Amino acid sequence: MPLPRPAARTRPRPRGRFRGPRRRLLVGLTAAGLLASGCAHPSVGSDRDDPGKPVTLTFWHGWSEPGEVKAIDDSIARFEKLHPNITVKAVGNVSDDTMNQALRAGGSDAPDVVSSFTTNNVGQYCSSGMWADLDPFLKKTGVVKEKVFPKTLLDYTRYRGRQCALPLLADTYGLYYNKDAFRRAGIDRPPHTMSELKRDAAKLTRRTPNGSYRQVGFMPDFRLYQNSPDRLFAQWGPAYFDHSGKAQLAKDPRTRDFFTTQRALIDAQGGYPAMEKFRAGFGDEMSSQNAFLRQKVAMHMDGEWRGLLLKEAKAPFAWGVAPMPVPDDQADTYGRGYLTGTIAGIAHSSQHQNAAWELVRFLTVNTDQVVAFANAIHNVPSTKAALASPKLDADPEFRTFLGIARNPHSTALPPSNNGDMYVTSLQDFAYAEEAGKVPDLGAGLRQLDARIDADNLQSEN
Image (cartoon, rainbow, N blue to C red):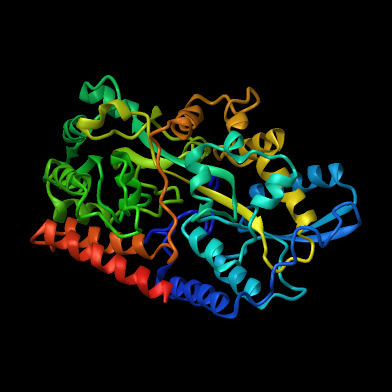
């Protein structure tokens, strides 16, 4: 996510990455339709085409910004040089909705290789068969996935034992902080724990003579830019579901601590009504009016792409990046963060699955390719070898995100058969809770679990 891009790029939240109930319903109906029909186009199997013969593959992806499209085209040029018999026709700016409709319909217009900016739908892609199982291809070509990919990234590309996707670059989240503001407040380093975050946020909050905000230390409101509750919650290392697949947010004491900590952060800086009023005046996330760039917030959670944007905008202050703080009772996990990313796979209906695998393998496994693509679009590489490569961007701020990606405590959202519906339920609950509309947190969390379980059951039936 290096450059400003369409909302579909990496946000499962209201600000962008959640794309609303209509999208979720469509994906759910698509998956349900495939399941009911046994898949509109049965698998052609891994031995039905010869990857050594001349073939043209269609590759659908979501990138649309000129610099990103060039990086994709350069990647394809490198692939075609290694495989002169394979021609790749790339189609960009494709949404998940469009892709899912095409995969359901099949036919000559459907893609062979597919990619998505969200990991939330992996459960549906795998369980419905829309994306082909990659394990036979991995085994046949000697790729040991556990040795290639970090566990967290591998986990978000498979569902119930089915590996239907592979990581294609990653996004990680950290704490951007205004070094000049820190110096003025007498703070010598970014906070490591949530209690330090609360203390520093209060010190960094500045007001005008009439009492209105000039700057807040840290804006924890869930509606701000990348502040999706699931991303902040990652610092607690939550387990959304038990071994039977039942929601367990109400049973996990980390959930209550997460919400009470978020509430304390708000109260320490003036309370929800005042902070929400201030937030409502912020500019667009990807514009020159971004609140961190305009120094309206002194600390801000964001992804690795923000550093490039700050440099391009010539931010008028010194800034740095650190991992997000962790709960005080988990201080030893400092360095962790939320992980997500782009994924790639093979369309179930493709008549050229062996050739398609060669492209997927090149894009996701080849170290030099992964590093070159990561450097080109300022995303985090998604293989162990690429993360350790000396050819990676040497920018110290960017390397902070590499450390977060390698941290064994970093977490990603678990895949579900109903896509991102459980995350949307958490988001809706979080909006109500931070606004003081949940009088009993325990009861509210139990209701949230019941809602998630009901949605999962409906998706299965």
